[in-house]
Amino acid sequence: MSELRRVDEVVWEIPADARPDMRVPARVFADEELLEAIADDRSLDQLQDVATLPGVVGAVLAMPDVHQGYGFPVGGIAATEPPEGVVSPGGVGYDINCGVRLLAAQFGADELGERREALVHEISRAVPAGKGTGAERGLVAPRLEDVLAEGPRALVERAGIGTSEDVELTESSGRLAGADAAALSERARSRGADQLGTLGSGNHFVELQEVDEVREPEAARTYGLREGQVTVLIHSGSRGLGHQVCTDYVKRMDASLGRHGIRLPDRQLACAPISSPEGREYLAAMAAAANFAFANRHAIAHRVRAAIARVVGQAAAEGTAQVYDVAHNVAKLERHGGRELCVHRKGATRAFPPGSEDVPERHRGAGQPVFIPGSMGTASYVLAGRPGAMARTFGTVCHGAGRRMSRTGARKRVKGAELRRELERSGVAVRSGSNRGLAEEAPFAYKDVERVVDVVERAGLAVAVARLRPIGIVKG
Amino acid sequence: VSFRWVEHTGELEVELEATSERGVFEAGFEAMRELLAGGEGGAPLVVEIDLPGRDRAALLADWLAELAFLGEARGLVPDRLARLELDEDGLGATIEGREGEPPHLVKAATYHRLRFDRADGGWRARVVLDV
Image (cartoon, rainbow over all chains, first blue to last red; front, side):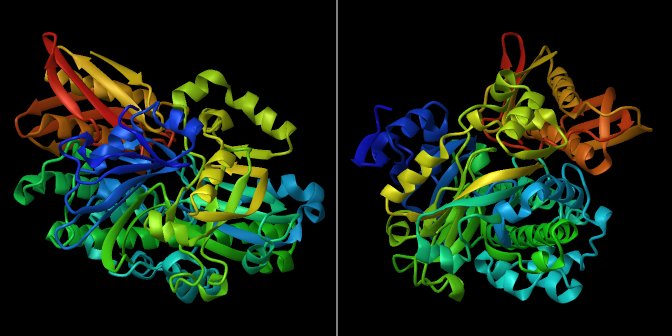
């Protein structure tokens, strides 16, 4: 950590001259304890690798939940300037637009009472996990091409799934511009064909929660949140379709590096100028995959509402409103400091402040909602974007607690069955098809979410609006 | 041939060793066979694979990615590598296995810290898998 210098209370910097190939400094948002965990893996080396990308501007950034990934660290941010600046598919990741959607029920946890276990069970039956397919539980989806072009709006208008309000309360209204299905390979399309409305595996989940603390009452009212209320947090992405888009374009850009005169410290950072054919086609394919991911979470939310209808009643399902939906893995063209930049967010969340035109009108006064899932069994947070994010992080904050232990390490420390019993003893109903997967997501494998949120607040990037306590988990 | 899993905070990293280039690909098969194991019975399934590529490291990543894809798309639980032909232009393989429900774990094989080198009289490779 010798090259790190302290900038302020929660910001650290590796100067651009730390390595001859770095073009900009690398900045880390963390307190001392988080920094120690961050320095324990390859996160900082990876962040310095990202700082070598052609056309990168300002500084590359690591959020307090950062951990070692592949190419980019997870929790990393880099902005590049077109036309010569590059776009890197690895800087978005394989699960394009993996993200979270929060639903707020109108009933409280006390009203749900003993039906909690039944609701968790019903959600697990309604939302296919693992290798599950979308059609197997009755979802009649529109044509894939329409979903890729229009996102969740295609589901509302062509299949009567969800509402227009859900679409409006989604980042970028659930549709990234420039999406082109023709930029996807046949294999990518085939992998997505039957995966709409499915959770997948790994760290994906549907979590039933109770709002147990409101810290910013006005913003909470704006978001439709109150203490004691039941919420549902959905975490999934673009499934096999997105994985294949990234695979295809990393390979293609890796092969074109010589032609563009680009040298990189890691092949996974494979990239191409935004203005090049490879760059333009990747952005078109990535936008289509991102639209698919927004639609996927939209379809999962539809299934969650159906489960609520069966267990709590039709009125309760109809009253379950969408708070917002945010992307974690995406590259977007945005204006920052008067320049149009391509902002790569890899395991990071856009967090625009109050007044931003990119925030839906209903939430504009409070700022963009951001959801920070804790580790399984611990609290999650609802944040609101603040002006500091625009000034310091290209309008970005963290995306979760952030892993600090390998999956193997977690499995060595706890058995899935034992963890399941512990969670149930603490009042969290669990449905998971895999004890191995459950153990890998054990709470101790993650950083302390309270500390992560504290850093974000102290840095002026966002403010904590409410804390959500888990009462049930359906794990992918 | 041998493989071993290396600690990685977020993903799965595998190191492969063999006395020949072909052996590294066999070791990769064994590593993926371990990840895709699970489920009982299932109808026999034989899959033919042809992958182009002169770059051994990228070809190895493609090989592991293809096995993960077959697990996801066709439910392939691989049992045996019945044929593996490796030449300058790529590889051809026949895999015997069963149709089942392998754990849906690996999203992709990445190029991060990818290596395929001569070492200690044999060959050593490394691939990081996105999970």
